[in-house]
Image 1 (spheres, rainbow over the protein chains, first blue to last red):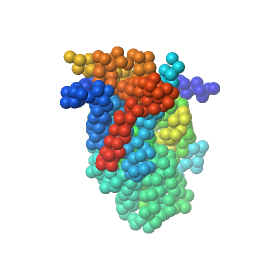
Image 2 (image 1 turned 135 degrees about the horizontal axis):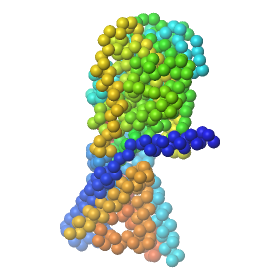
Image 3 (image 1 turned 90 degrees about the vertical axis):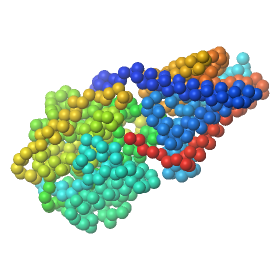
Image 4 (image 1 turned 30 degrees about the horizontal axis):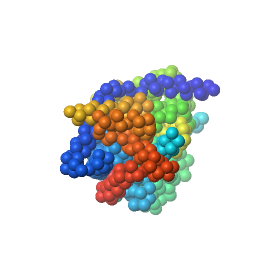
Length: 148
Length: 361
Length: 118
């Protein structure tokens, strides 16, 4: 009991002691980078629509996302994306490019363990939960819509 | 003579050789000029960071043996440990030496753990000459404990930077050099911190516990030491330790500092400072030993701390236990002629430096 | 002119992620999961399309868009094919993105080596 009290007091003390950072600079950075990535996405989409006017809107978005995923994956490979991430924080995690980064980075990192046990197994260490959560929740939504 | 946790050595083991090897970033840090070897590239010519860590440890052991001016066959046992699972760096490095090997795990406190056990072996006359070594690598630790290197994320302000580096010390029964006079073995202490980005706060209570035990066992005070140095509490952790000690009625003055906090310069973006086995090991085997050899430091209390956590345990909601072992090293230089006050000041006052600028966050 | 909306909304959504990072200390896997679930919910309640109408890439490029297309696919397929649609629709709609991410990750993992930070 006494130990619990001590730990609680210590945790509170540490919480007060941890260096506080002003949130505004990092919020601004994430806003800026996130906005830029989305604008680039819009630009790519508009170019596709311009060049292939007959494309359905949904398909054009598909191409746009694939191109963004490609760019992010490449930037991860040449070691640029982690530097963007250090600056932008949430700004480069939340866009689809962050999803691509979270798949490519462990794949590159665990290359030394071989193609099967390294690249293929570790590829989804970070992005796996995203796909699982997405699939499960979309199935639930689909089933709900079946009955309403 | 021995107390509860402290051993006072009769046949004081002599440090006859030491060697430190670090990565390029560490070489640009505050201790840069003191290291024996700074790698140009932290992969060290190997194809993986784990292999690089092993090779670093190996060359630190070879370097320390050369520094002691003895032959590898004079060494009777190697005491080593590291941070990787199953301490592979140490045991794989030891496989290239035709010497008995004892693998140790004390997380980042391994340097003191190996020196304390080694000193006990020599004091009891079972061994004549032995090597104590440890090391860590930023990239191998990152991928084992945190995230892939290429993942674009930010480091929280209390987080620390694992030092890429390895240090080795040769202990001998006879010879010239600084002597290990005491060792205090620490208890495992857990004050319920579960934030893996805040190792300093998790380990500070262990440092406090060992320090209190040491002062109680020996009847000494902080003023009996020229330098009291913890391993890798970082800026935050060492401030916490100062507060904790003050709470217990012991005031730590300017002669206290922390290797992790001193390690990097302010614009190297390491937030709370350095960490890892290599942090205390490389500072000990470069800066501290060279100062002891010159007599610029007379008596040092070296107490690296270790966070005994694993990713599995913390994912299961466990808090982070810490441990801290302390050893006392005394210089064999009798006349303390000129102390380079300026140098000492420069390093010991970095504690007063405030947390990083906006940019570091 | 709608580029301004794209920039503002995209920036705000990403800033929301940064708010989560600062105040709850969550890791990137949790952020991504949270935003995918937000997307699924937005689509399920029919709020996503009105936003997407004027925010365009501002809401489609963030991983929210990924969640929304999962839900949209599942809902559409359920209406067209019944119960089996709930299982096939979501992945069908997002297969392109996932497949691209996997393929590029695989190729670049073969080409590039991880670089240390400094």
